[in-house]
Length: 205
Image 1 (cartoon, one colour):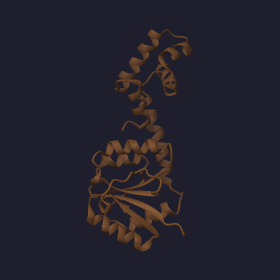
Image 2: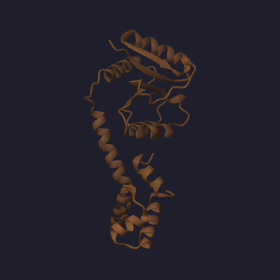
Image 3: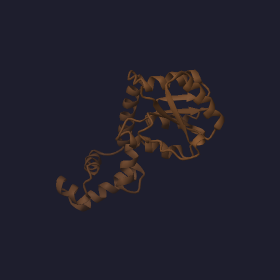
Image 4: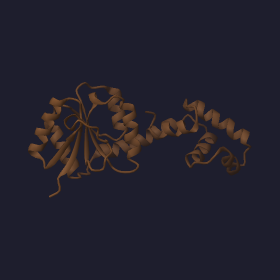
């Protein structure tokens, strides 16, 4: 029988011990931890079917949330976020990044249930369906401030077209395209098209 590997990322040794003892008692798993092993593990390593993150051990959650969003384009990595103090901003960003299992760090009963559901590939998850709809609406909200002409240019930018190539495709002068791109950037409050795409693809996080 295959043993599922789980990574616990927490600097709290006591929390790690409690989670490990609880999960290993009920589930057929092998647990790795940055605190126990005294080394850095990659959150996105494919050998881990699941990563349990202690929010208090993460220095820059915004950066991590963006990494998770981009990683999901390549593979379906599962995360559980543990917290002890509810912070609305972090919860929203976690949800946008695709983390639907957000649990108080000492709610071991719910943790066991969530881990078991993920390991058993239980796909009946209404939160995931709601999340995809929310992401779509969030992306549409960001784009809603752009004019029809700016949205048209944005579509070409998303395809990787240069301003010169966009100019030829739309039969507009390069000066006109440059002006519309500048207006687009100003509305999105970004410095360049790379930042514009990043903001849209990370849902404004």
